[in-house]
Length: 367
Image (cartoon, rainbow, N blue to C red; front, side, top):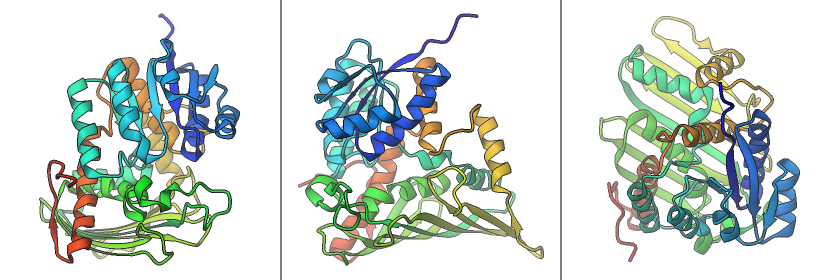
């Protein structure tokens, strides 16, 4: 049997998220799945940091040099949010597969433009919703789909993290606390993951009521509370917080079914201390899921052979590379991202007007 082709990878954006992806790409290089061809970032220090995690054949300050490199067959975009639109469109113009980190853009209009362009291009394209690859989240989805606990009725999600900005964490980049660059705070930058998960679990939202605060004084929100109604009638609450508890990142779900309840806590690190899942059905004591066993079952189902990775981005990146090699549709895709962004956009409109907002299926006029 012929040896599988190693996909030539280019990485654009060598900050913190790029460095996490580089860690996973190094393992994919070791697996023989990819070839780390080139990485780009305007900062020499960031380029060096990425290269320590994964040794690229070439480093450059110009993203076009990576995107246009004839040996780069697929492009990972892990630059700051404000750069995503131009980088995605630039990559699509070459016809190369593209992986883009979340959120897709600071404005919903730009998100729509990106998603329309990806759909028209027909290229293999994936968005960095790595939480879909978390074994406990996948177990929850299986319970929703199986119907063994009856129909889902409602949920509560609490999503909190330390403020990822230099004013709170010394040495951290600060673009996330600037609306012109980030577009939003805790809700868009962090809880776009939660918006994706609840849409994946319960289907698209149809309306949202939201209120927000900016306790730390930045021009983006650091606290938001949403009440969400889905098209199938499921109702839920999402509370998202950027706080000053450095080192903390935790997402907690409570999901209520007709005949059972689920309590689920996750972190983005594989085997995190925070991970837990409790399942309770009528007239029985709550059962705690063995997280290590659940991870093993999940990874076997996904065909993941190695266990020496720290971040779920490795599993997500592996799925994208597999789709590129197989010329297959990648998931989660840009259409999934549009659904999550539509929910977040409705929340921002609701917080501005003080009234519930309908979730637009297509992007609204940014003006």
